[in-house]
Length: 475
Image 1 (cartoon, rainbow, N blue to C red):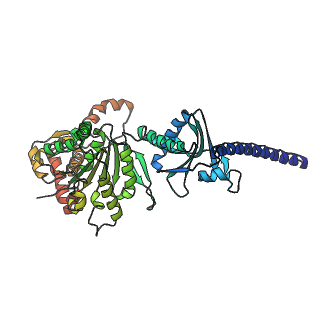
Image 2 (image 1 turned 90 degrees about the vertical axis):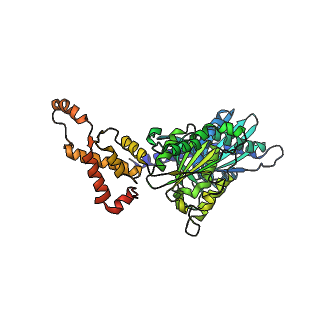
């Protein structure tokens, strides 16, 4: 390439850059003119900027609410700003000025709006909206170093800004992507940030028949959960409080968590929040979401980890906030707080016994003879049960938790596989596959010897530690 060619190429590049700069400058001047039209009315007084904060979990609902509002405007435009965290005040006064706020591409971020379903949401943008009532300028951005979003609004007439925010919040409440879903709560890693994230969960389906409890315990559980949510309209009409606090307690492995998963499926049109005691940093925001998405159920597992004696607990702030939030629920709030614990003895009295915090405690006992027999049948599904002395197995498992019996059946199946020689095999030729299909599909048969061998290994061979870990409490 000759020197002249290089010079020509350089000049062309400068021309292209110049054209782009001219277009961008013209666009900036146009936007600035529109913004000034909002800032300066007939009275020449700039309206005040109103700001509203939103946690990161609000972003998909906020984005969709803004989209629906834009669809109802007779004129709307969405543009980007650089820097992406520029406030509306900086945008209004910094376009082309010393603050160097410039027009840029709209910044989007992928956000979960369903189980394995994402949506590109505006994370940083400037909305120019014209309605029949006036003009609105809204600046959405994420503050530097924070997971939360900020929406700054200015309008002409000034009162339109507050009405706009109220409209968005009501839209978010009515059309939330979270409503009626099962959600796992994750607090911000920053201990000074109350922000929370919500993840859509798809729990394994649990049917009522899989919940093995004494009949009276099961009736009490259903009355205080499923039946309660079914009759909230009647309770509300009669002036009864709709807030509810339940505490499920019992030995480890007695089915408290399993039952909570069943409730997540059994409660139709109820938003379920799953969180553990270690995730209570953002409990205040969780209660706000629960109230917005009511009817809702908050499941807090192992609450004893934070609700211990205050002298022993390192989470006094979280405990105090949890109790305040439970006390602060309005009587008409369809919010149920269900807590589980293995150690009711260490639950602080203020949490466990004062009305308005916990209304009902339900004990999950170790299974009796009838429940242990039902558990054996439940966990032997897909197996051939060939017990000559069923009662002996039931007697030997007195003091066993459901978790212990589940492992007992699995270990008995392993002994049966060893006894029958049912080892893993690779299919030989295609013609051999059909001949062995019937034999391969035959279920394992569990006999008395298999259960005896499994019991001996679990109760004797593993020692006291194994019995304790697997949830066996001998009398």
